[in-house]
Image (cartoon, rainbow, N blue to C red; front, side, top):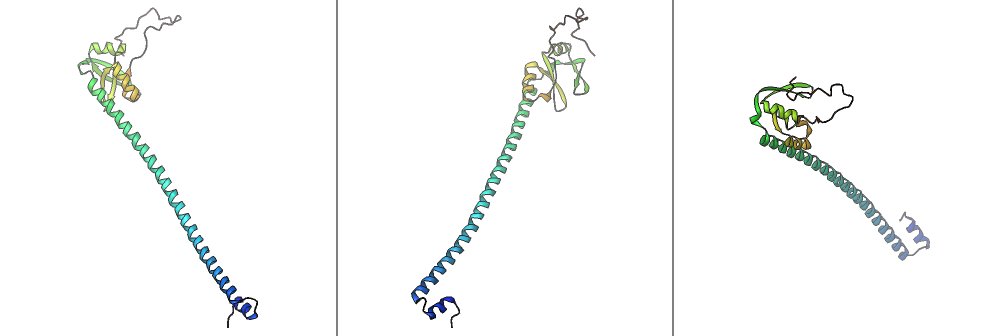
Length: 181
């Protein structure tokens, strides 16, 4: 004894066997397609998640590569500065005369020759720092080092002596080049 509406309609004569089979087939196809759509939605959501993860990973990798590139550039600049200092430092300018200069807030002293004192005061030589040691290099080399990183150039005389103020009461008095403080 059938409990379904189709069986009841069939007994009442409202539908025939062909219509019942057609209805069952349509219902079967409809449920089958609904199941496929659910699977497709799940697959689409998974695909979207995977694509989003890939985008995030690509962005993370790009940022990491930029950081590595910056570090490599800093190492290259540091190597260039080291080479400039080692090749161009004036070892023959070391002497017995003390030359005082400032390194940040500290007053430091380096012993140089009398010629080096005059050249440092005139701006022909400069004092640079590498590995907690002070070296004397030519002005051109100090400018190249300063272009790469300013923190290595400790003392480079850049004041011009030709600037005269008309109202300066001490304009008639010359400041000696070898003034030591």
